[in-house]
Image (tube, rainbow, N blue to C red; front, side, top):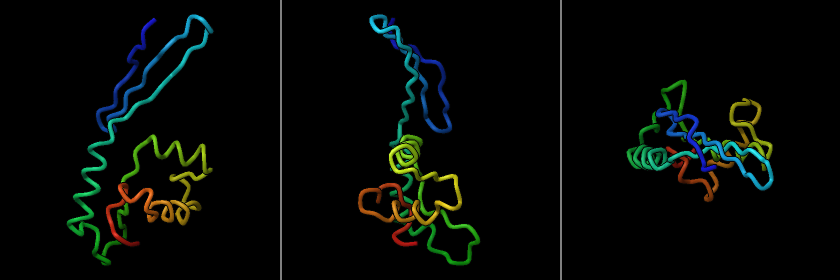
Length: 107
């Protein structure tokens, strides 16, 4: 059986797929996400100094695609939705490895 699209979320550009391997009898659910729009928006906001105002109560420091959120949670144990993990999330965002996720140069 070929991979079959189960759902598409236009807000996050995430597709959920179903696949079945007849030889092993295993079913797989796979999510894919088009992150190009995230990266373009982050780069634009960073270059414009969009979040440089210190007068805001809330300051956006980046946009993190679902795949990166899952990677950090499963590989590093860091939950971006847990306020206690915020210092670790900020540290990751400020690293050179994840600079493409930031909308600011510094926190």
